[in-house]
Length: 164
Image 1 (tube, rainbow, N blue to C red):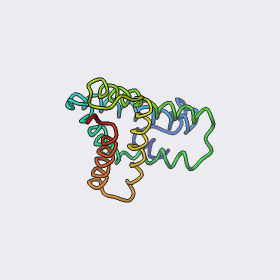
Image 2: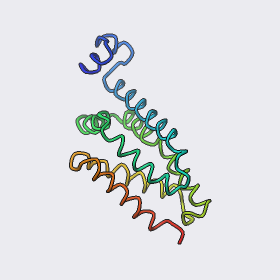
Image 3: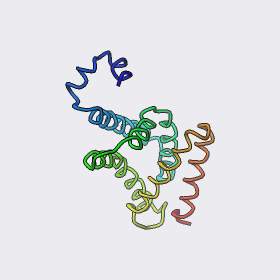
Image 4: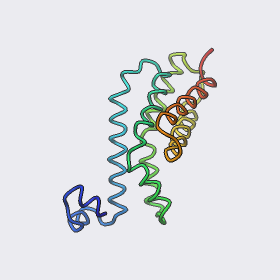
């Protein structure tokens, strides 16, 4: 909380005036972070022409965002306290923000004949699991190695879904 006050040049009182608890403030910061992440992706996406390129682009976008301290604070926050069902539901809603983008890319790939026909929602969950799961390597590996592993993950996934 001290860091937030310092960065924003605000007192705790003025912050708590707008946010009734640190949890509410934290949820707001997560929401802003996720919206920024999506906006940045939507700016990058047009540079990729195919759904396959977009999946690799998403992997790079994840890696590029790994240094964001809020991502690590989220894990610490959730694992360090009892979270109400309401807060958990809110966090899940925020986590789900990119789902539509993943599903759209997969549907584009299926419609273009790049990918085998299948359930884009099922594949979306698998891609989300791959991208978010590999993010735990942040504490073990350097960024280049993580990027390499993300690309291997996308390549492995594509082996199963690409049309031959």
